[in-house]
Image (tube, rainbow, N blue to C red; front, side):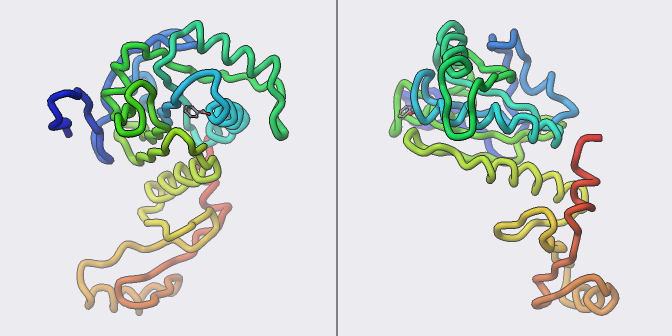
Amino acid sequence: MEDTNPTQTTSMPRIGDKAPEFKAVTTQGEIHFPNQYAGSWAILFSHPADFTPVCTSEFMTFAKLEPEFEKLNTKLVGLSVDGLFSHIAWLRTINEKIEYRDMKNMEVKFPLIEDITMEVAKKYGMIQPGESQTKAVRAVFVVDPIGIIRTIIYYPLSLGRNFDELLRVVQALQTADAFSVATPADWRPGDDVIVPPAGSCGAARDRMESQKDMKCYDWFFCVRKISKEQVFEKILKK
Ligand code: BEZ
């Protein structure tokens, strides 16, 4: 969706779109997104600036949780509009000097994109001028193994992300794909999942009568059990 304001050149990818392609320099060498992540899930996320406190707390938490995302076959890719040397100096400071909560000597092993020109940030609608003209907001794009954007979350500069929610989003998307179901409010692995509504009331009633493992609150709202073990058996990387 192109912005209609002639003073700005920005675009906003949407859920269901192919993730816009780019090549970029990162702290782990050049990457080609989303092409080189084919076959894996990816979380592309932006942060406003290196050497800032909220971002530091987030990067330490991403580094701590990277193995959990890896178990879900999910790679992390960060971005800010700072340069490579700033990124390297900041990540080194985090590693050598910052002890925060239970995190110490945190090593950020995933790539952090330098985007001084804001080319990638603009492609992904990460520059939101009402919030900041010069910094990316805290955007999160969850991209599936065929390069389709499956979830987008934006946070303002002042609000650090909720990492339980980011893990839950990936688990829920993968569960929905693996079992052809939807997930209700606050779903966690092991909770009941939603069986998508049938095409007609009659079909739903027949289904209610025939499927013993389903519970229906009404014709349009049926759930079934999938245990935590069944979920993790399907979604965890072997
Ligand atoms: C922070 O990460 O602490 C931050 C960055 C930019 C603006 C405000 C806060």
